[in-house]
Image 1 (cartoon, rainbow, N blue to C red):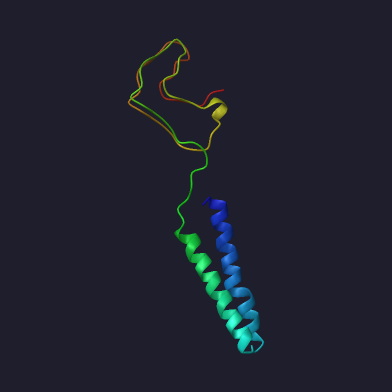
Image 2: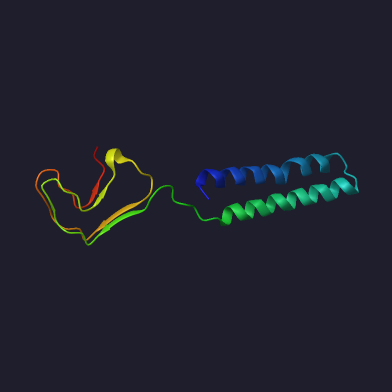
Length: 111
């Protein structure tokens, strides 16, 4: 679940827990209204608990360059993200040597 959806579910759950049950309870509810308020509060609490227990998802790719060879004369043995595009994580471990102009053996965010 993305962070935006998680916040949305939490806010809606909080509103569901507090809004209608509060209005009904302040106006002297009948038996049906009391049951409805209790069910609505329980559903809101369940939605809140569910949203809080969700792990965040990563938007975009997870790129990795591990144990790469040598980059020569402008070559690339790592991760290339032109213009800094991409939202996911990028890792470069134990990359080879980069020799020459514009060679890259790590993470390249240039255009």
